[in-house]
Image 1 (cartoon, one colour):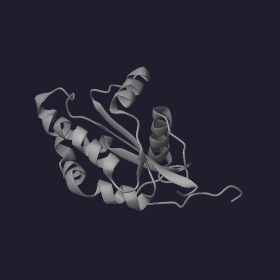
Image 2 (tube, helix red, strand yellow; image 1 turned 30 degrees about the vertical axis):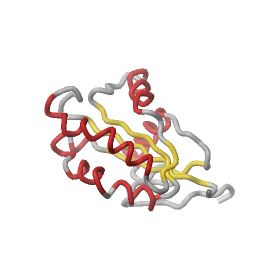
Image 3 (cartoon, one colour; image 1 turned 180 degrees about the horizontal axis):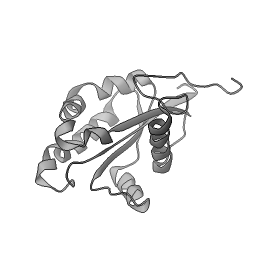
Image 4 (cartoon, helix red, strand yellow; image 1 turned 60 degrees about the vertical axis):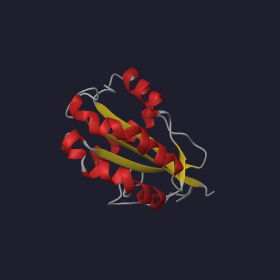
Length: 152
């Protein structure tokens, strides 16, 4: 285990509420996608779906319209291998039928190994990359940064 792990968060706004029949294709895949993530090589941790939904509600957001995910991985490569394969890749390819394309946002950032980021932290990092683009504090697959070491 290295000194750093990779945290990631993503959010998208549904075209309809998650209990709408047009969202069944997405909703029916969520549990399988989360289970596969937790079994994937390099996966470290994620809060429960219930926790993330409760957090969104507490923060005044709509968990029946916003799909939010937060997880921790050993490396960018481990996250990439999971995100762009299997059932998850299939869902990504079909996401435009379920989500407003301009609402999709993702971010990654390095954390000390053992740290468990909060929903608030993930949302703040998403806002950071939306406002400033990729930086050391929050980046994307397209523009990545290595872990920052203290004193640099």
